[in-house]
Image (tube, rainbow, N blue to C red):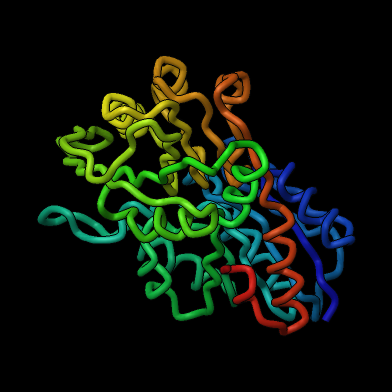
Length: 312
């Protein structure tokens, strides 16, 4: 089957980067709006029997981008595409992966059902907020990691000989341990309690950060409240400098303001989500491209090769 790559409006720069690494042109598709706001999709080339990949992070505005993905998938299936793979570097609604209160939805499962119902045969994503979301799908899901790319960038730009990797909460310990192993560092853990949605309070630091360079590792930064408090706690416990890395730069609300006011020297994020103009202008935010990793995943899937080498 011939490979065809199409993209919605969520992240055209990342789509072009993936196409460049694959050595294939972007597919011709128009994703527009009717005057009342309804999404209109036109696939402007033959995809019959083709291996189709739809690049669409479901980032802000999440609902619009999810609908673009679903409608593009439906258009391709109705045009007799051979196989449709959704490449969703950032999976929106991933934080709603369980019931946290009576009569609450599990929105991550609902979105998974919608994706499958649209006719998508496989999904590629990166750093799901909760790994068990893969189990919400009855189709193959390749959950790639941003850690290898980010850790390599850290090794090239920071002296890691005296580093400690910090998990901002107990749930991120496995992620921090893997990152620490890649750069040859020890780990520390912040004991955090949430007082409400998008609100966190740092209580205690477990581990030794004194006189060391600390690197806080998380899967995403949303309002940056957790990151700001974590960085302050690490510095108060004697760290000489504090950096942060995260795969997904959600950066909503007062995030950029908090980052500027924080003790963080630099935050390294990937380009799974397009930065807002305010975030792009922030001198403390550095973007690391993941197009090559996603391109390799697409190439491996297309040729029926193993994708597991990309998880290391």
